[in-house]
Image 1 (cartoon, rainbow, N blue to C red):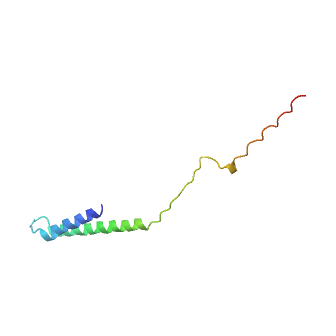
Image 2: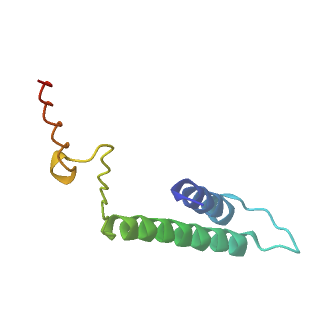
Image 3: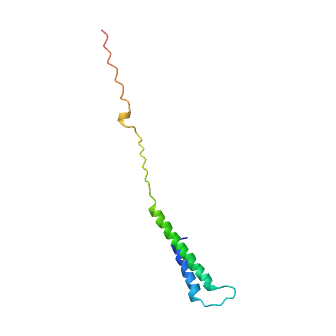
Amino acid sequence: MGLGTGIFLITLGAILTFAIRANIWWLDLRAVGWVFILAGLGVVATTLWYWQDRKKRARTLIVEENRLSHPTAMMPPPPDPPPPSAPPS
């Protein structure tokens, strides 16, 4: 449920409470209207409270650095080439 649902319940409750003057012997429309109004106010209050709670939460951004090649300082130096052999005499 969200803000729209709460406003819809408040509107429906106001219509049942203040606009309809029907006399139904087994249903009190004014009481049902007030229940809808209070339920709508509860939904709106809960939604606004939830939105405020989400804004206050601290968000931690974790950045992981992953290098695909090793840096040169970590690689051993290449071996020295063998000395040239002296020509036979």
